[in-house]
Length: 308
Image 1: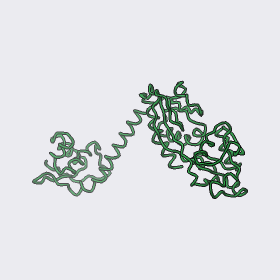
Image 2: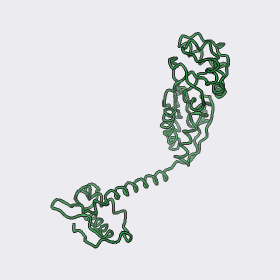
Image 3: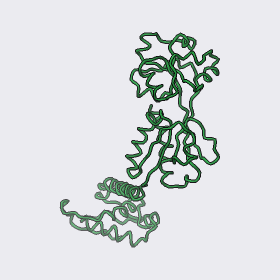
Image 4: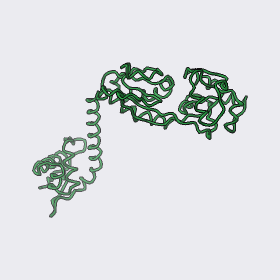
């Protein structure tokens, strides 16, 4: 390749075609026109013309011919880093344009429990809206497990594994369950130091739901329904009772970040964790829109739980 020797132009007058930059970098990295052509899958004369055009636009040579190929000039070495940044920036721009072109639009209906709808999903869905502004979300706060089967929702986030064969489920995490209480309650009633001390405290439990009673039975603890001085099956009311200092409750650990001065107690209690499942109906799993939201939730929910 014949280097073009032209008086260096005033920098303020330089105008060049940035599309020539990848060819320049290919030759710089390969050390020869033939090697660059092979890497790029291009014709050697084409690369030679493109480099020569860039040299003409810059007003100075970029390469000198050697016995084995070409050697970069001082100018080529001086602009190499900036050229690589330009190439990377162009690639990033193209990726952004592709994402914009392929951005999903439409409405996806998500169902989950009242607690998850109130505490777990809001920051996740806020991130989804920022990343996919074309997707509209309908959030159904319901403890019913049949929403997907009745087609009342597209995606479900549940704390129990769906058993229906028509649903595709993916386990996202195990949610730690902790005993906890507000500092105001502990200041008044004292802090339990061992699990047996719980029976000396005001406990918050469920009304007809026997989950806590069964859980304590697994732990060989003599806790009955009447051991809970406050009982409600409404999950949001349950959390508010704990946050108000009404007694000691048992909740998913991620809730505590939203309740100032509510602290976890007795880590040795060993309460079994609650599994978190993501489910979708088989017939709509192939929808690109639903799949986009499903995949986003599968990544974002574990990340949010780790943050909490």
